[in-house]
Length: 635
Ligand code: SF4
Ligand code: SF4
Ligand code: SF4
Ligand code: FES
Image (tube, rainbow, N blue to C red):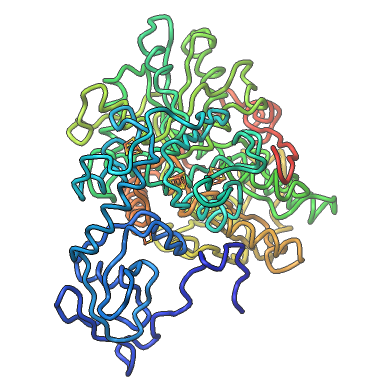
């Protein structure tokens, strides 16, 4: 059955699919591109056929993650026998045709289109966040546009929308390509942005033209990642962070999540697929951060807290026959949490109360770490480098001050950190490697794979299997790699029969007497990335379908998980996200420690500070939180 899409018909994906048998009769068509004969697949667009044959055709509204819009017309080509130029991104090849991609008519048309776009564009490249990484700028450069044929706007027309902690909108730089609209409606199924008005009054707006902070934006930043210009950007706190670094009375602490290190090389022009963990640590110290911590440490702690919470929920439901919300949903993706608060508030009790690793770290830095080092927490400035735009919102949630202070002061994206490193005159790839600082130095590979879709679930299962069965996870999954949970399929599902149980480990003995109640049970888990996929699971749960029988579900707001977050380097596409995932799994494989419960620093913190154990009173105060029900149309 054809899936119901909310997109206008004109923007729906092509329905002509690539033939199943690629070399079958009629599966290929011979066309001429720039007088060269090539064979292309029946139904393939001219743009894709050109790409496969190394012929460059410029684009603006087209993005590989999104359905076709065909509205900018920059990609026009000439087709012999056709009266008008055709948009190559939306033209499926179904018969032999002769195409010219850079004839005089095509070049003139493209130049006019670019001139027209520039005539309504207000912005100075040198002060723009997308300088040197802007598709409009590259296009103007490519076509040698050196004068404003149709005039030029001298003053901004729109006021910048600075209301959101995460996303800044400057519609003076918008070219109406609607990539953000398709991202928000189709990819994320949130629907905050839409083209409003008609003709030359058309612009991108929000519900009732309200500021972004007042509508149902989940702060995922996916629209930023796909905007070709500087019209959308993250809310950048780096100036305030520089001030803190320069202030000798401040102790500036930085924690770094797994995904930025797997992508920051891209900011320096390197190919995706390599992690720069050690180099980044050195660069951060040279910039002036006083200590550098690994967020993977609190990812390990999250596994202990969230895993214990799951065990307690199951124990209450299965043994004590209490009413408990199951499946438990992960809560470390703040975009997903806000999505649920807006669209499925009746399921708030299913969200794990465990804070995200970022926020757990924030609470520990201003309590445990401050006490240990004898630093007044008010003098600590706590920064988190995240792949995520929504983390900026998360650290500003009023609930996130359990340390007695704002737990995390600033969320910095990978892009913003890359810029700070450049500003400090550092070429990151050439930095010597260095380690994270104590007392949170070591983290496991389980914490690291939080960066990829399925990673939280894999990390949780590596621990749950060993704690419950007393057996090595490697006895079930070779090399502790839980392959069914990996990959970029939108929704993944797995079942894990618990055939045998072992003794309850000491750290959990005060919570459950034995595991016999789990013997013979089958643990059912699922994973979704991108809120459009999350929606599918939520609708299934509402209808009492297969996912309502799950025990634990991982949800990540962004495509690919955190590695595809709204703060990661631009551009993004599935190939790039796969390479970042490879970098993460390669690093996990290279680590001696790959299970959260084996992290000695984690067990030590339960002895030294969180003394009543996982989900105990102290951890509940510092490491757990609550959520709020929000409106369906406005915040
Ligand atoms: S959006 Fe692009 S063209 Fe416009 S000011 Fe920024 S860099 Fe320049
Ligand atoms: S941040 Fe996400 S939810 Fe908000 S407008 Fe952009 S795509 Fe939509
Ligand atoms: S904000 Fe960016 S993505 Fe959205 S229409 Fe404008 S230029 Fe395109
Ligand atoms: S890229 Fe083809 S019409 Fe915009």
